[in-house]
Image 1 (cartoon, rainbow, N blue to C red):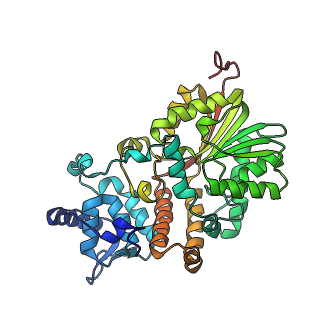
Image 2: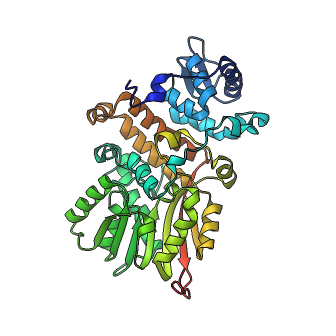
Length: 412
């Protein structure tokens, strides 16, 4: 293991013997109450139903959780200290019982043991660039391994389930087309896309005759998106700019943003929606696709530093439907439609996960080691479990701006 690349995983678990002993007691009791089979070390598995979880190094496993909570739980998986015959099934069970795993008296002490988010991950102009760089600039080749030919890294919208890999590209186009329809994108539309991805939405908007400005903070995504758009013959219709959404200028008939609000951060939600309103003509339409979580859980965890923040998406926070509605209303925007399809995201993630785990040698050939591969497998399984448990949802939201609004003195 590369200790410089994975210092906290390589260093191993810390924590006092007392804290570890208390953690062992709490975690073992919690696991015993769930529909899981758990094998600790060489001991036979307990439980009679559910996925099998094998804890290869119980001492290290409990010390990590005692020291770092759910961050330690994820790092323990990265270190190979535990496995499951069905990781998604095991994580789904945990997600379904998340609020009941820790006794109520200890939940009230959350502030004493939960890590708080580091100030360095705040989404200032500089911080947002670094946070996006850490995930989206990993390698275009890496993402191409598990994404379909559309290179779309957000939930698909399937016509029917169950689904197979051959259904994914069509389902991604169906999702994109529905967003463009919500935004009223057609011939001559001046469209702003916040969050380019690898260019598929901009390409399909240009095919409708729209003039598109698409902004991203990922240099790697911009390069590939620009190349794909040029190859498709739409370079004259689409401008892909390396630009923060707060720095965009001009006036647009419509705005589309797909699973980008999760990276904005709660401190900047008002700025985000004020910016959308500022850039939109009176009577304009905004189509958002957003991952959401229940409002009470969002409020309870809003300041917590999680494994996802540390290793996958620094600086983000998944909003609730209520938070989106409140921030939009404060910016003078109205929610007109709000449709959820979380089950479709679970299937999208399943297809990505299966594609990724089937190609370990190719992942390694790109320079990603075994710890990274376990991290990425855990990330995809963790997210899939969140949607299967109903803890997470994904929604397409249509916002509109009053046609009588006036620009800055004026328009909001």
